[in-house]
Image 1 (cartoon, rainbow, N blue to C red):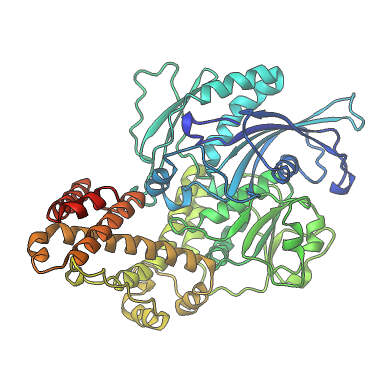
Image 2 (image 1 turned 180 degrees about the horizontal axis):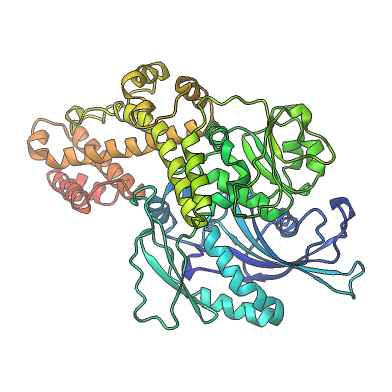
Length: 562
């Protein structure tokens, strides 16, 4: 396990696993040798987690390819909440974008896998994986780090890994909005940690300070953004459909030839709703040994709201009852528009030799954006770099999501009580309930058509969205933020009130009750980090002291010790 600073933020583990032999199928595997090395030594995983990480660290279907490959997975934590090693986690999550917050119930695994011929092995292959385990989805940073560490480790083994861990243990914690220089193995990785206040879709701020860094740092343009154009190249003409399926939290299976393609496609799909957070479960790479295998393959209940990436052909049979299956081949960049997969009926899904395609009966609510395809085609013809094509695609998805979400933001903002309705000596008024019919009435004059040229059944899309986990997650987050804002405004109203005048005709019981309530508010404001100035909190503290000093000595003694 590799630590980032003293707060365990960045890397939750560096575990090395080794499989003795590679079989032709999952059922042909010999037992794994788990947890050959774990850093730090006191890092605790449950046996269930160890087994899952072990299986997820290797391709689960036969691959004759030699060399090194990288992929990612996401694993549900077992055994309930664990005590945190970090103190500033709440602060990080408050300042980080919703899509990059630290996960409390899942681990991310970043794998560097090596397969080479070895005549001493029974079947002629030696396989080994180095895995970084984190609670943060910093896929670019972690995979870049593995590219530096893993080849060296495979050559020099344990002493090298221990030295690397000692270096990473000195890294500063990730603070949203800051640019960090992270030294490792004679290289300095330079990254900027995104912040919630960043403008969506903007490029990372060019504030890298390189003047005192020798050698020049390895600058990562993004800690988490994938090459969307490369990931989506076989499905570009269906990007509208995939965006809708993700927005609605539909169950999707991604069937791919390798864990690399599987994990990249799943991660790309979950990122295409930004800045809206994808609130459903997702597994970039999933095997039949996963503890949720039975849960996902049962036919006695509807498939869960999850995007799952698989490589083993066995899943074609076990998951063929799922409503949406995306079958993709190897991702190969070429000078022309890659061959686009077709939408096919689920009945066309064959157990053997399934051709690439989107197997679904889903009908999109919105029409295709032909302009986007034309712009991407023009970029291919002009040999535009892949990162530029990706930026164009990301901008399109961002504008589409914003067009959809802005009417919801406007409507929910109208449910907030007026500031003049907040008085110091009464509990703050309630946020009015979200009424779907009332929202739908606002769309005629303030709907997505104001910012988006796409035509289609927007009303139908919203109605379906209201039933999805993504709506529930968005609404809960916004309601929480609005409730905290109300609390903050109430504290400010108390600060501006004349407490001495209020106390004149009040009984001791009422005054003591006020002291207890103000103390409770003050504790809640600090614990929940409400959006209140420190000056306001200090004034409330002084008010409490003023009120206590006006009471008889015996009550003062009781309240000072309370």
